[in-house]
Length: 119
Image 1 (tube, rainbow, N blue to C red):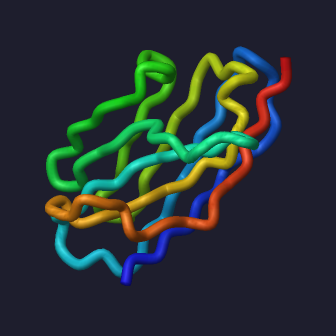
Image 2: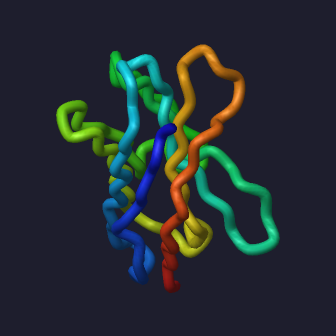
């Protein structure tokens, strides 16, 4: 069973930066897709960006392209989300998720970390 723990959230002013971390345990092999998601109050959870663990290929939601970057350190099983040029609308609880590459849905989730961007 994959266990995920996020850290790095906090309060930042608009235009600032934060880096979130997600430490994964229980990964067996490397055939995983991992991702960052967020959920703002009153809204559904949405994908921020995804990364394939083996190749490191990424894709992002249009709302964060050019501002957010996902990366991972394979040897440490750590996933990062570097967030730059933050906007108030980026305020949300951010979650790390994982699934086997061939699975349709993400089945492993962290507990989430709050990111608040003040204007």
